[in-house]
Image (cartoon, rainbow, N blue to C red; front, side, top):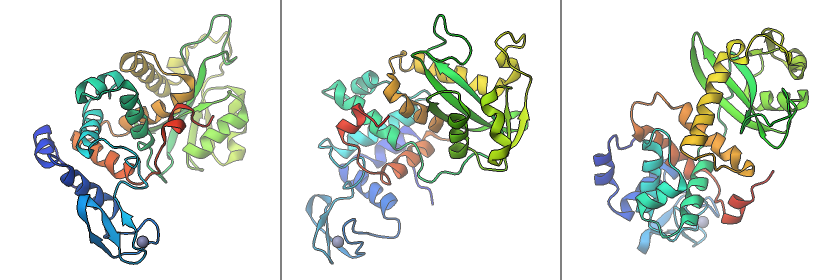
Length: 308
Ligand SMILES: [Zn+2]
């Protein structure tokens, strides 16, 4: 059963101590009871400071070990407040803002925490989009002067897929792609959209081989550089997502997102967008904590220089 606080007051009452936070993590990480991360033993004795002693391999185990909370010396209460704040703000938070709200000593810590939390915003093994899906690309940072159409300059190119549920938008997927070639676009589709789905695109030739890749292809009007039809009329849903994404990057993050970190901002945007109808911020908080105990630790060096 999904168990989470629904209001700020409930949150404050429930997570007033580090022990309460730890027990919540244990409940989410070990729903069927303790599992030793070293030997998979199922029996353990409680020790001081919230540690468990594995009865098989005698190791001392913390619920934080092997999760994004692993190397943090700051109290879990503060992490919980960060997670509540990030999920209860409609547009999330900049590092500066979270530093101020939590009273963190360093900007670097605030920045690293937000990046660790973004790693936890992708659910491992999530289902691909399916049904009718509109796909397009957009430049982040806007087209460069002197560059036209899909010729790429220094700006990042982001592929967008949106599930269409009648006239409404369903879930989305976003991914930075190196170029708008057929291999790049098909790579994105294979990761994001289930085969057999009906994929709507514009007339760009990079989408040519879609049918041979196992999708039904519905091509909208032919796009040329001199096309009289603006792209937002042709592909309204992906266009809408692209505008919201750009507004969020410029608003919450003031456009200060570097290309090598963009993927993780896309993950955060997707996390929020796909849960935009959640009845309570507690639900997002719950998802975030649940996923945070399922992913590997992210040392600082992997945050500042992520893999290309
Ligand atoms: Zn063990």
